[in-house]
Length: 463
Image (cartoon, rainbow, N blue to C red; front, side, top):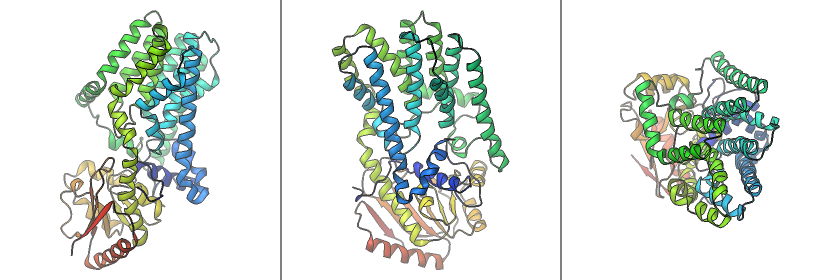
């Protein structure tokens, strides 16, 4: 469907790749000379940075890393099942992978496969200590606990309860050292952001947060419970089964409560997977105590019925990739031909293929946009920012910016003709701010359409 072009299922990984490329040359941000923090992960862009030297092979770096982390996760699950003397270990692990979208995460091109690997590593370490009698706590476990919040902030919901479990299990100073190291690392990153004129948290975290007061916090928790209340009930049943293991019960309860109150769900099956992967390993242990290998295979083969939303994500992965190919990738090709500063509301691929200034109208790569979006009730501020940065073109979703500057000239629209899975909208509108710019954009589009062979999109012109 993508004519041989490898494209991830979201536009977001390309933001990380642009960040990684700039980090490698000593700049933290998307646009040269302008600091920004559009990545929700502290270490993922840093991890990608050395691969930016590989030229076109750089585009495959997130895919290869995610395959490696997913393979390591699978081996951890398989090893746990073998230790539990379970038959059909490979099939059970494969069923769990399919049910939780762990295959689909590979093609997101983001940090979630690493997040799940570290989460499962911590869960497996707790299980080995709790059920297999391993007394010595590996330094690898502490390293995973330390790194996890640096992969994504919400992983504090795993790391600190895990440290609490280790403290109750007899560990003392290493727990304190690890907890202090986590807080110092997060504080150091926040201080760095402040030192370059940004907020204490990345723009991506601030823009996606729906919690501002106690009322919104309660509404958020209720929405989470509506989605995953049945899993919470299952965790409570686990706590009853493990009721004599107080440290383990508190671990499971704390992780679940923290995720339900502060965590997020959705956005193409990736935000809640770390929590589900964590508790699923303890379900494996519980099932192994009461079920034979055949019955475990039956139970875990039925999991896709319980996690239909994740199964949908996994099965729709090719179409999601086709969405990004036929919308954001085509926008990027047009932007590279246009070779002018550009305003967009989908930042990733466009910013990666051009060295021109990119004004991010969602605020991820432009902190001033984030502040405008909070204060203004309409979208007229777009024109002021575009003039300030000498930007004469905007590729935007009309639905996101209903009150646009009156002088905007709509040159064309780029419309998907495949099922929309991960693009925010079916159609992107291409605007110029004056007649001269409109003529140039129209010429670029006509030349582009004549040469581009994809039939999964339409370009409609407005004369």
